[in-house]
Image (cartoon, rainbow, N blue to C red; front, side):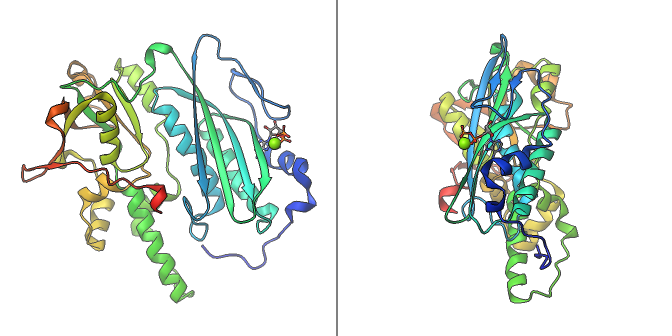
Length: 348
Ligand code: ADP
Ligand code: MG
């Protein structure tokens, strides 16, 4: 969080645009057989043979989607990649390439972009995606970063949001609510720091939820896991907003209703303890937090035995007829209508 006063600052202008791109991407390696030509020509060339290609883009804007006072640039680069990969995995596909475009004001020295690209490179290595292009331009204020992710999938495996059927089971990966609470902790520490810059926060007890916020991971493992288990979800979406709004997207697009059971929602113990400390309701946080990048999907009842023993997968409810509506069944066994209180970047 603290800025090093002695850090080296090389101005971007001294390199020029081409020098900058070369410098930042010098260590990027091509690992995917579908990449025919990566960075360096007018366009990348890809070959997916008989596979279908899935493409997804996200745009992240400083001050709207991230705050550099508690988001280190390396983490930002990493996160910008994984939020896009998450969308590819939500199609039940394998991510293979990304492009990265940045607009940057002259307040950023080269060293800052090196940090950003270190995060991009780390994510591309861990998730095995090739960086095959991008664009670089200046901005009058702040930093913008846009990542486009490309993936491949056999046609019969593609999973849309609109295939959920009555009686299907609603399944979520991992646990949820952590990323939002991590942000709450970081925001609190930032305001403490502003009042007293000598106050060094002890964040050990929040390590899991802060990591969920600053270094989220996408569920690369889930498409191959589903394949291994012999399960083709009937619908799937990634949880970038709150659980509630994602459940509603699936149901609306599939023209069905659902019951989600409050006591089934998977929560990490740190989420529960931090909610107590902040006097927040953990179910509300799980339903309307956001940025967990877990996957939410539906499976037909007959696939239940295939997934029931898997610790990564939790059944949180089931699909009903559309006319029954979308509900949360509370611990007290009352039914509350689900609301789309999802985290919305437009409100940030
Ligand atoms: P053009 O003038 O056609 O837009 P550029 O000079 O911007 O071409 O880009 C040259 C090459 O560098 C292209 O392969 C482009 O995809 C790549 N590139 C440009 N900016 C970035 C970036 N920020 N990250 C990765 N690759 C980039
Ligand atoms: Mg360009």
